[in-house]
Amino acid sequence: MNIKKITLFLLAVIMVFTLAACNTRTPIEDGNNTGDGNTVVDPTPEGETATVKLYFANQEYIMTGDESLDHTIGVDREVKIGEKPIEEVILEELKRKPEDEKLTTVLEKIKVLSVETAENIAYVNLSGENLNGGSMEEALILQQIVFSLTELEEVEGVQFLVDGSKRETLMGHIFIEEPLKKSDVED
Image 1 (cartoon, one colour):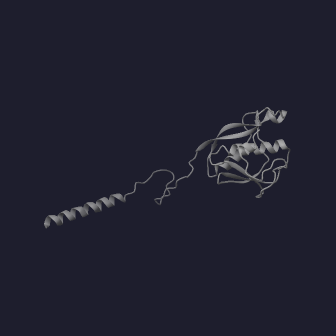
Image 2: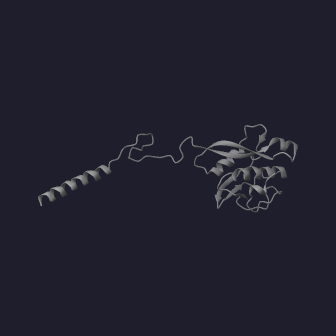
């Protein structure tokens, strides 16, 4: 009977030490420790980038109107990923002039109000301000946006909105009432 009591006592002591060891914290030493035992973790570490394919207008096509030329040309660009959705980052990058002098953007004066993706459709809400131009400019705007966004795996088409509402056309030339796929706006 004595052996049973000693064995039970030793088992209890071992369990107490084991449980106490499981509750030990090892402090993490970095600049994100708040001092109260909590560590702040940045969900998007600095310097995290992604390569995206952006489509820019072919300067030679714009100057000559030669339909045998590609209207837009794809360029791989390294972009910084932050708190913004990748679709928004892409639209911001499309407004920046490309490094290649043979390419240009027709989106510089276009204001993007918002972009969201739902059920494989990117909803691009543009401001009605500065939405004027010819059929070539309208086609290039649509191509730059549709081609670039549909490079994303989760985007099959783009629904354009103007000031939050569906419109028949963007600038009076190309119908945008339904989501546009790449094949709808190809050269």
